[in-house]
Length: 410
Image (cartoon, rainbow, N blue to C red):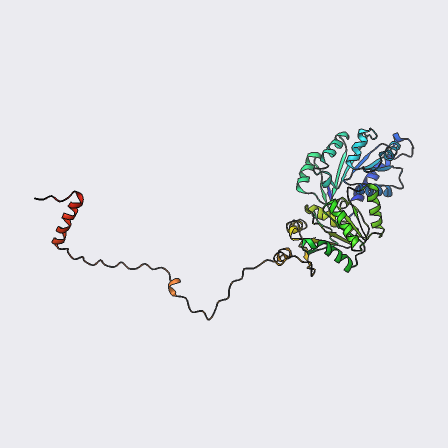
């Protein structure tokens, strides 16, 4: 298990040793039998899989080792043709890899290394069944490598059920955010979020900014609204075809698109060179997703800026993020966009102190009876009672007799 901050070269940390390990087994032969799959790398998204495969291709360009990538959203025939030629390094997304397993176009009997990139996402409830199916097909004797910037406690517990005595390498503090990224939070009324986003992009003249939305529909809607504000924007998410996603990402990297609105599909491992700003239009529900989102900037020794537009409903989520990264994020109000007065203090983190009224010098002194301690009164001697005349007692006797049953006459 290896953890490090985003943008610190985790892909190279496993790609280079794998290539060095496989180099003695490399063969110049054209026969597919001489190029079995020896290393399997699983990634949660198509974009990350393509990026990792590119790293293997670049790092191993001088070695007679073959590598390829398989992922969904595209035709399988080209992938099948590539697999039939033989590859030593296979990078894949779990779903498409199982499609090839079902079609019997890939064999795992010589796999010696398994890598789970962005392991925390790979082992969550969405991918875990596929991962277990793939692991069951692999040889029992192999090396397992798990890489991620974040390892939540529940994932760490799950990993122990899949691995035997795993060693852990943690370069930085667990779940730490990139050190070269500055964080800023803009409290804003929820209905003014889109207006504030356009205002920041236009007034600050941001030419390349990655904006994260919470849903696919929200990403499409936001990109459309930004275009109506004369801002060149596009969206990338899981509902778009692979060709559309690749085109949108390529235009953004080339500077043709100023704003790319994305769901968390783009927050895992993507390396956009020199990206200066990341904006959280929707605050993520998971604090770990915040670490991965802002990790798209401040990479490879460069500085970056992470901006979050925080509505009153996002207060608890931001508090969880601050606890995770162990840092208080700077609050900056933008005039004209802040929420109501009662919620501003909460979002700004102000702590209201109880005010005690100052003593009034003109007030008359209080009655000492309210401050004097209690003192019991001394017992008073009882005064002697005067003897009642016998006549009175005699008068009471007939009355008592009358009450008990009447008077008897002699």
